[in-house]
Structures are given as structure tokens and as C-alpha cells.
Length: 413
Ligand code: PLP
Image 1: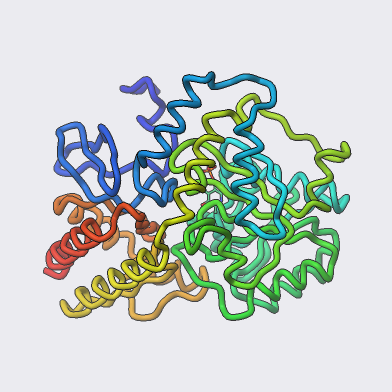
Image 2: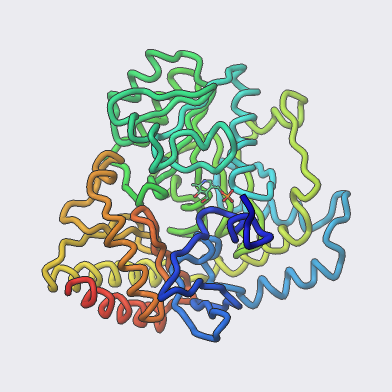
């Protein structure tokens, strides 16, 4: 089969695919703060924010200046450079007991490395992940992502493939059963919130039980904070929740849109990388541009007003729900206040089973199109998320509310 574009399917990452609107494709020309502009010069309030890739808004001044300087100083020295340690120190200053850092180029790579470290530390191979959780697109871990047959099967059975085995979210009995059946688990990896399946919150005590059960069976507990890290405060969401993971993976927000991610770990665990039990490498890992992005982002987050951002998000959620409900449509939002999902139902989903049952791809797609007509971009998937950044405060949050109001009126017709 031949293609009309040189770029396979017209995009490099499947999540970027957007439907045509009135026969036209959307191409982004530039982005700044809370906004994106398309190639016709039309401005949209953005809620995808590079899939959560920045919490400061697009192209924040301080980060761009630091990255420009790093680029001019030479983007790839091959050898050690001062920005690398400075970036690690800036990150580790915010992450408590997880005081050791390794940089990677993407969240998927960070998850891959964290699992490798856990395998080296425990001498075991098997990895347990949450069914419908998204921990990146690498071969093993992509098994059981939301929307796959395996994720659906996990509602009543225990799908596995190679060394990966799936856990049922928010189900303590399933955690106990897993470790009874598989005594050889190297690590459990989970997000603080099941974000990629529509921001489903953990039931009270669920993650603490998961952590405790993993430890009791000699497995490491990894929090995948690629999406949630630095969203509730300048640090890890798992720490806010009182959890004590052995490692955490971070990415997205830590670099404000620059390609950088990393594994954070306790010294006793990360030793595996320096005593020869596990290897890490990468031409671009910890490059000066990535590190400049982290240093400048950490600096900016020191004075960022998280309470104001979270309050604005809470207000927007209430406004959206009230608008749809007022028009006679069921609607509820789930998640953290600066990253949440809108469902067209009355009850917030508590499990992936609930989410799959109430997902309304037809309405989500209609909302996406209506929002585009009203100058805002929301993801077209029922599991998609609305992200807010500090750059949205307060004007773009209000504009977003207006777009939702107008789009809701169209959907209710
Ligand atoms: N883990 C989580 C929780 C994510 O949300 C993502 C990306 O969306 C990843 C891992 C993979 O990160 P990346 O897209 O940078 O490879």
C-alpha cells in the first residue's frame, strides 16, 4: 500500500491523531503559554499541553532562555558536564528519600530502566502492572493498556505475556491473589492515579496496601509519576499521598516540553547501576539541553502558586459539571484538579471496568469537535485528560469555561 505522506500515517505518535473538522486537518504552527495557534493563525486554549509535558505553559521564557544558552554551549559534549549534576540535584531536592537520579530521554525509557534496576536488585524477572495503566510504549510494558482486549479481560482474569502480569486496579483481594500465585515478582509499577484510563482515583488505602504487599513479598514498589509528578506540588504526588516508593519515574512536567525524563530511587536500590549489576547508557541521556530544561523548570516551580492552580481547576470542574447537568446531561469529572477527565455519566468510575462501561466515545468526539469550533482543544478520547498550567491562570481558565459552556449547549441539542 502506498501512502500520500512521507511521514507514516502523517504523525509520529499515535496519540497525536485528531479527526478532520469540516474536512480539514489541524496542524499546529506555534504555541505559547496556554495557547496553540494553527497554520491558519487561529488561536485555541490548549488542554493537552503536550500530553502533560509542561505545567508552566508552552515555551516558558526562563526555560527557553536556559535551553538556548545550553544549545549555544554545545548540545552533546559526550562527557560529564556541570548541568547534569545540577539538574539531578535540583530534582532530588524535591523528592525526599528518592535522592538518586538517572536521566533518560522519555518516560517509556525511564520505566524500562526502572524495571531493569528492580530486576537486578531482586534477581527476579516478572513485572506486575495495573491493567489499563499506561507506563509507556515499550514492548513488554505496553501489554494491557486501556482499550486493549487484555485490559478488558483483566476485569475477570489475569492476563500475562512474557514477564508482564496484570493487576486489577482498586482491588486489594486481587493484589493478595497475585502475590500468592506469583512469588517471583521483581516489581509492581503503578501510577498514583490511573490517569491514562481517565484519571480514576485510588480507593482509600489501595496504594498503601499495594506497596506493603509488594514489600512483604520481596518486590520493589515503583510509582510511575511521568504524568503526575510535579502536578500537585513541586514534588511527587505519591509522597503527598503518604507513600514511600523505592523508585519513581518522572518526565513530562520536569522539563517543560524539552525531551527529558528520569528514574529517581533510594540509594540502596540505585547502587545496582554503579556496582555493575545493571547497565544504563544512551547517547542523549542527560544531555545539556535536557538538563537545562530541568534546572530552569525546578527554579520556576519554587515560586509557582500550586494552591491557586488547583483551586482554579476545582472551579472549572464544578462549572463544567453544572453546565452539562443544567442542560439535562449526566456529567462528572475525575482526577486531580489540574489534570482531570470528563465522563458523561452520574457516578465517577472507581475501576477500569466502570470506566470501560461508561465511556462514551461518541460524545467525547462530539465534544472535541464542538470545542474546536469554540477555540479550545480537548483530547478526542473518552480516557483523555484536561490539563491546566500556571499560564492558564486566570484568563485562559475562564475562556475554557466559556468554550465548555458553548460546546455543552451544542451537545445537549
Ligand atoms: N508513564 C506514564 C504514566 C505516562 O503517562 C507516559 C506518557 O504518557 C509514559 C509513562 C511514557 O512517557 P513517554 O511518552 O515520555 O515515553
